[in-house]
Image (cartoon, rainbow, N blue to C red; front, side, top):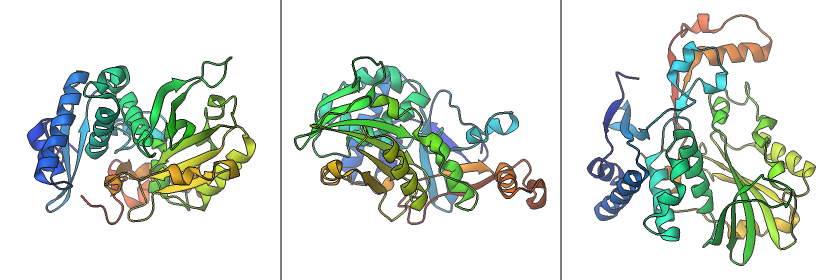
Length: 328
């Protein structure tokens, strides 16, 4: 990684150059200035990184502070889940950051980051908060927006957002599941959609009002399939106070990234949902330890042999996963 990754200062000139691949020069420059100004108000100093994939092809991302995910974890006796790096794990997505900045300025003005500063200054909370802002943007003209709202009188559990869209009041809990990278890497034959993805959600919804919708928005890294659909339907059947689950996958390439699972009373939520412009710039990119993948495969098959000895990747990092059709 140190030999192939190029690091640069987080400045408007370089970010304009990155955004110029997606926007015209004027728009790229405006967005870059907004991102840099907002980051400066947070008091953090990110580093720009460029990961080359092949000739004249690279992936930009930013980093700062500490993350639970790191390549150094390969040598540590910790959970497999933390032994990978990538977008949504320990790398920040510049396009997603810009999207959050544009939304924040539109809804709350130029100093919007000051209200989110505590969460945006530490990297794990930064990634989660940017994701929450992403989900707020996926609705038509959200208004009357409230953050961290308790839905019951005898609880301190909160949902991320309470807002109105097209006259409908929605209580929305947002979850980013970075450990979904294992489904990307291992594939359907060797990995499953764990029920643990729904942990801590039902407690956020102790009550339901007929005039409101209780919804869950979950961001996944692996493609959406029958397994994710079955898991959502099973969860909703167990929890009558939750009206629906909406998945968004960054690993769908040129296919539709959203998957709706809505109870009849919430069916119209599809009409309230919108895709932002350039949503397709979101993508799954994961670098994982190959040897751990092969060990997981062996365990799944009930084989005690260490497959990492067969492929010779005992101490090396494995593949970079980028969906087909990625417009970088």
